[in-house]
Length: 170
Image (cartoon, rainbow, N blue to C red; front, side, top):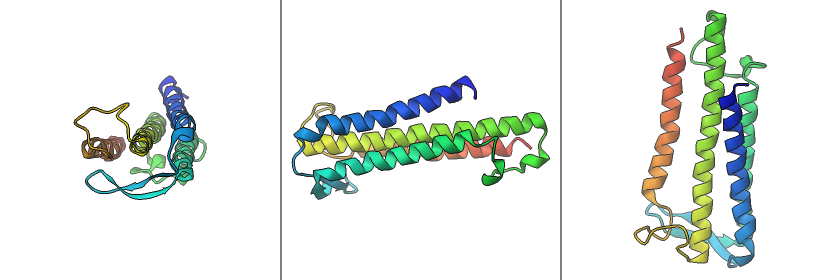
C-alpha cells in the first residue's frame, strides 16, 4: 500500500473515532430529547431520545470500515468492482494505476463521508445543547446549507473526477 493510502486510512479512522469521542464526551450533558432530523432550511423538525446520538457514529463507522476494506481488496479481488474500463484490456502498468486510483477514490470518499457525518453529529450536539461553542453568530441554529452543499458537491465531484480519470486509462 502506498504511503498516501496509509495516510488516508489513518485519517478515516481518526475522524470516525473523533465522532465517537464527541458523542461520549457530550452525552452526559445532553437533554433527554435531541434533534433527530433537520429540515431543508436548517432548523430541527424532529426530536427523539438522546440514545439516538449513537446511531450516526455507528453508521459512520460501518460505512468507513466498508470503504477502507473495499479499498484494501482492490488488487486481491478486482472482479467485485465495476470499473469504467475492463482491467483485462489494460497493460500491467495501466492496471496498477486503475487499482491505485480506485483505492484512492474509495478512501477519499471515506474522508468526505466522515466529514459529512461529523458535521451533522456536531451540529446535532450543538443544537441539543443550545449553545454556540463552535459556530459564528451569523450561523443558523441548525444545519448550514452552505456547508452541506459544499460537502455533497465534493462527494459528487470526487466521483466525477475519478470516473473521468479511470476512463482515460484505455
